[in-house]
Image (cartoon, rainbow, N blue to C red):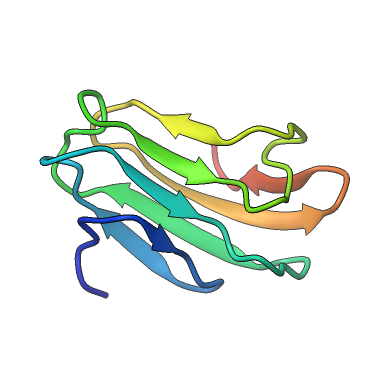
Length: 94
């Protein structure tokens, strides 16, 4: 995978290095999801605290909420797993 420096729609089963050193970036979850689908995101440049990474929910819930997820932690790295339409995408590890 190449380092992402602009808004991207993610694909299930892929991992993404996201470089927000120039600007904030939105990483949009896949439009269709099946139970067990996973996507991983890593703050490549350690700049998510300055220029956030937004995880666009693409009509699915994230952690049971109907809201996008804002990542503002430097060097954040995480995996989201799709469970169902009630909870949507959940963090695999906390």
